[in-house]
Length: 327
Image 1 (tube, rainbow, N blue to C red):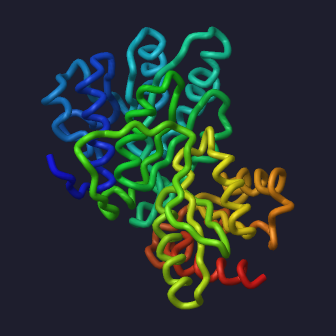
Image 2 (image 1 turned 90 degrees about the horizontal axis):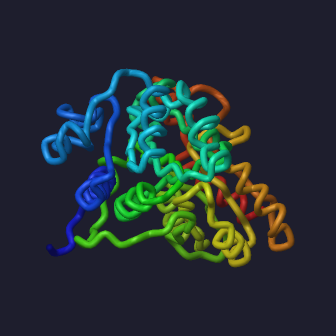
């Protein structure tokens, strides 16, 4: 098959099909993932292809869903659990934090469970369907957290997540599902967890980001170069836990100015972790204080005009970069 253009959603779909076809120990379940194909139709046709024993619907109980996944993973299966929205995962924090995350430390047994969690705003979903909870998941010992921004990465990283021996929370930005496309080949190339992607080179500043904000940062960087002549590096973290500290420090050394951007809340957000990393290991390389651009500490607004003001975008990133570079 020749290379073809796919969406972010299709990338995840292809990755899931690959592991389901090649690894019979994989099972996929969650709310409405069977005949209905999931809330976003990502698993449409999966039950018909793989059968109801491997792809099935569950009751509306996230704690029970993840609890079943923990049991399956401890007995040799590789469960792929879908949370219909990442927000609903808060009802299963005990299962993730105190059960899944501690199994290997308590028993030495691996727990190869992947929790798919659609997240993020930009579509008017309001406060219960748009949250960015990556910082909460990253806080949990024993849990890996993956957050791709491109179709090719989403495809490769979902495969790597399912094959990893540890519990993985795989965050999928809903806005990107059908907005971002990329030309990919037929072969799914392996991509290890914990490796960032340098999306754009530059020498005047670096943006450390992930998810939908990668694309907003790219647009901002391109405009700044065209309008002001500044070149901005953009680093997509891809994996948030464990994150690629070496690439971050190298990027700081190459640019001397750091802007951290994410869609989640500011206080104790994941950007605080990256800022601390830079302060601890690369303070001597900085020509300006590390700056963060995030959502404010309030619930995600429902009204479109308020949500646009709430989320960082290419305009606000551009303004922050100019201020940072001209500090």
